[in-house]
Length: 443
Image (tube, rainbow, N blue to C red; front, side):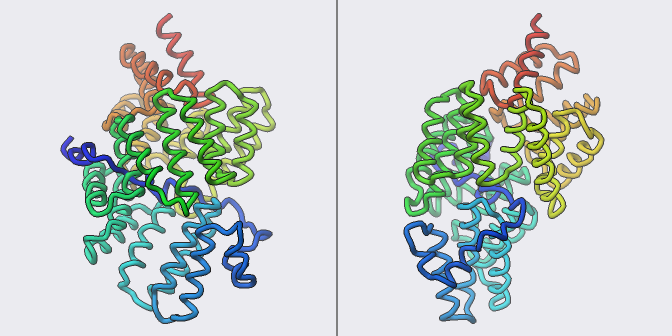
């Protein structure tokens, strides 16, 4: 593929879709916990003590800058960026609302400020408003085509919208301008999308080493992504060690706790997996963790506890969708997996794909079509989801089930075998369906 030419020859990548990948919106207001900047304002030592994070210190520095120069955008830009960093550190994405308020103040002072526009693109990505993010990033690119950060936002938006060739060009430009941890992490994701798992691992190792040691959340994030790629080639023990490293660098990191849960599931240690998922949920109630925990309870026959987690998942999803359709694709997949609300799931998936044509949105639509018995269209859309050669067990599972329903035995066996070989525990419940279907075809 022409667009992969330079990137796949250059060892580099980003912090995989920084915005989209760094978390979820807050699930509920946390009124009992004071915001970091308010604590710092009342007690400056709170932002500089032994438990202060890099984001805390940047928030305080931004506030001092604003006090000294209230009519300049720089302090507000720094404050906005620091709030977004705090959101990633804590998983409390209510901080993004404060980031937006700071950016609005900056824009009132200087409407065309380049840094504010670049930050606006980054913030829009966290809200999953990918089209708007792309527009903002392109405006920033016009202003300063030599700014590597602009190409990070461009890459993320283009990937989420499914324009992979343009995304490769954008990340290559980012690498050429500044080959840092963020560039290495993005290249890793691009490589993974194109089925080059070994190349993705290679690039993410470089990203983890290049990450700023003063920003432990960033280091831990890279370790989790590296572990996930190692899981994808069956190196379960090595992957889990990466998750452990992430927890050493950034204790109680919700993404690493959830990753430990996945690793324990893969090892057959269900009770420990539940413990890690529960700890992750306590830190940040995420849709993925709620589903995983609910599925484990279902597998153990603990129906009431499973229902509590599924209800939590739907609460999070519906809350996000009410704001900006942030999680509608995942809600559609959840219903399709369980064979409920299939008409509504298909409507959601079609609406999502009308807005973005990335491979995972195509996959969600194909699965909903399959569950609604629309097999011919399901296969056509599934082919689009597989177009990059991505080695993803869930994609192959969906492709195999669709092929089986169409009577295409050879393709069904090929895809289902790939699914269970790549990651035998890709889904606590659906992996069992994949194995049963494969055994039935081979019987």
